[in-house]
Image 1: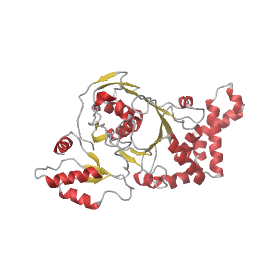
Image 2: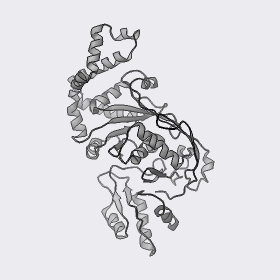
Image 3: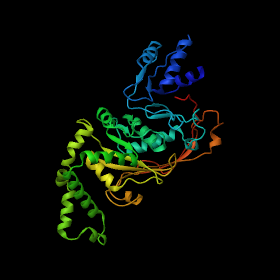
Image 4: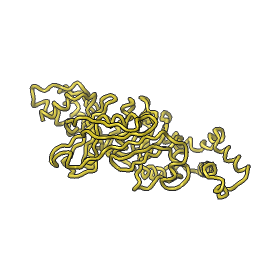
Length: 391
């Protein structure tokens, strides 16, 4: 335990994320050791309980009495042992300090097959931050826990840009929009399935006849603008129809077509929430988000919809692109306005190389390929393995 505390509090972190159980452990260590020195960094505690319960007040008081600076972090639930893993130690400025170790709850995980350096993760986060134009004003709200590669890179990108993050545990709870209104995020992160489920509820509550008519007109205009000359006959032909489609997509008329959705936006997001975009993360093995869902999300939330494609659920390859309004399957996501692409490829390593099954496994050196307008085409990143306690 003493070695654990030394590694935590002497690491170059600016904050420490830990569970309530670890905070209880730190308090016990502080009480039992007369030589215990309180760390200069704040301890941010998450809890795997409903958000309303928070961290026990008695535990916070005991920790503060021992000299520990404890901060409760709302909107963070199940941040810890996701599928038996705790992939984070802390965040320090633009540098990411991350750990990946074998948990006592899990004997195997795809996470252990990926070899990630601290520098590589920071570089990937920087590229994603530039591609999404992230800044200190951005607040990220996730429908999912950051267990896998794409979610972790996006989260680190927001933090590296100086923004804030939030997570929600009750993925299908009606409380989700209460939390969104209070947090005021600038973008939402989730899976196509979760967005599709939420949209079914939203459409039932906020999809009146006028909204459905405006949606149908926008869908027709976008489809007409995307098809070629030979296929245009399927959606009608003639200069008048072309003019009607251009008007429907124009700024003036398009603004009017979104009026029926403004009341829904106010009810769901509140007055101060202004979403810049929605990012849906998927994988080839999962069903792609249907174009109709993309268009409904854009209409209801009044923002652009991006799709993040993860070719390997952990590690591997990630790409960002704007979701289309029509088309089918994955090919459809090549349609529409392109977002600057970010592709990250981490070298894999065998599970045995990461350590014995009964010992923690930390991220080590590896090779990484980043391609995109803001990144080098290929770079070798080497770094010594970092040790640190599970947090």
